[in-house]
Amino acid sequence: MEEARERDAAGLPYVVVYRAQGREAPLEVRLVSWRDHYVGLWGYDAQGRRTYELDMRLLDDPTRLWPRRSVRWHYSGPEMTEFDETCPRITVELFPGGRGRRTEQPQGERGRMYVSAPGSRDDERWVDRPVFGEWPLLSSEVHGLTETPVFDVAEPAAAADDDGGGLAPTTCWCPPRPVQPGPIGELFRPGVRVTDGYHPEMTIVEPRRIGTLRVPSGLLAVSGPDIDHGDGPHITVSVPPGEYALEEARARHSYHCMYEGSEVTRTDTMAVRVLVSEAPAVTWEMALGADDDLRLFVEDQISGFATDGATGCFADAGAWEPLLALFERGLMQGDPDLDPDVYEDISDSMYLLRTRDQATGGELVAFATTGDGTYPVWVGRTEAGEVTGVVVLVEGMPELLPDVGAAVGA
Image 1: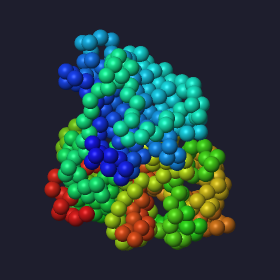
Image 2: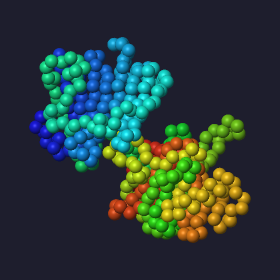
Image 3: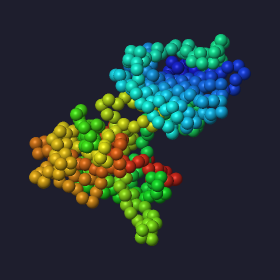
Image 4: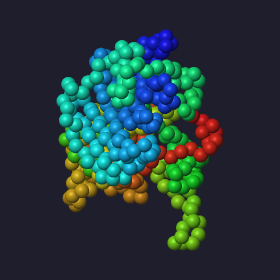
């Protein structure tokens, strides 16, 4: 107990499990990691099934917690298994500023979904941050307990390094994290073997350079040019003013073509990149939009740019409006009178076209993705924190094949 109190004061992760005498299944589990701005709560029924899950976040006010997300499962009877796909559930997601969503699924995951806005105001949503050991227990009301349940306190894992290093068991509890970078740097290293989940083996070939991009403002925009941009581009990354190479990461693979009746080899583009520096990236981070707050991200959440037309772009943010206007005139309106000095098509590449603002020299280069949706933007940095490259995967994150990572290095 005293060790848990010390971990609480230091902000380190720990778990509290509440149990009733004579009951094997827990009544309630509380997961705490103040350094990650996170407190979780899981409630259980008499059959040991999780019936309630609450995700709370510590934001700017140290005395209050924000209820970021809650899920309630309503099991139809004692025979229904935990998290059954047909189990009715209600999910509520909240964001400061009045935004939120309430999702009701009366037939579970396979049935219809009814979405509405939560009915409470921001000032009604906050939860007081409790003092250590004085947590209010939902279990007492749900199970009609008259005596305080006993509880055990545990660290997530003794093998885990509290500074982020070391290896932890796969069963170790971790606070929710946004999606993590995969082998992004390896996609530009010839000879590396990967799989995209559909093709069992693919071999990375030499990156293909497709011209350059001028960013005289020193602010690189990465966005979907086909989406309404009343507030400007989705993502911006500060880089030194200059002209940078545009590259495609490509992978070669072979497969049996049923139409040709023989083995066919083809090369596909995995990612596009603005190469800012030849220095190798030591770390990769997901670029955030202006309204993104990592403290509110749930497990594997992504931030990025959105597209309805399977299109993204790299551009000089300092000339965003005129560059976007040229994109719309050329590609979307098909204006035949555009000057070749301000608009040009790019052939035989994932890069589609280039627009150029004559007043500033800033440029926009659009590229194709493999579908609609949201695409993360990955920023590579040196040990000193300088940007080396900005990457967008045009489909999904591939995986390194076994033993490849050790051979090619970090």
